[in-house]
Image (cartoon, rainbow, N blue to C red; front, side, top):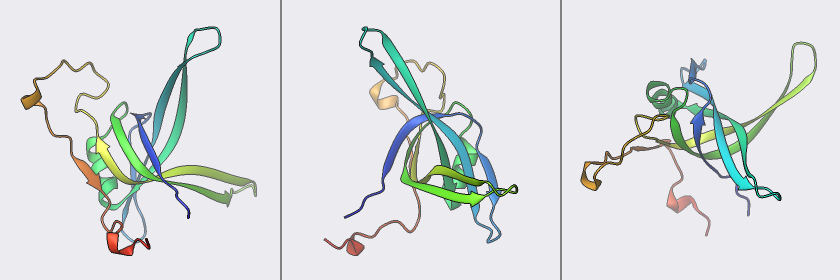
Length: 141
């Protein structure tokens, strides 16, 4: 059994960049930073930041380019892919990316302090999934 699944919550490091493939399908990419906080052996609080390359296709790409910008908080569910190629000078290059299959947008005021809101006044945060997802009937167990 194999599994390639990633869950990330972080902030965009740059505005989404959207392009159209020759097929007409939209593709969007952006950087995402995730932080890890821990206490080291000396008892000092430490922060470790990881940077991820995120790629979205189709409707997810359109939504990301419309609603996200640098500093936005977002939840990404997807899979890891590493691409390999040769550059113009013949050097081998590679890039590890997260192919998003589902996103959940953070609060509209991402990056700013949001005051507490009464429970009934909270806005519902939309969950967006890629079309053509996995059908339960296709699972072999």
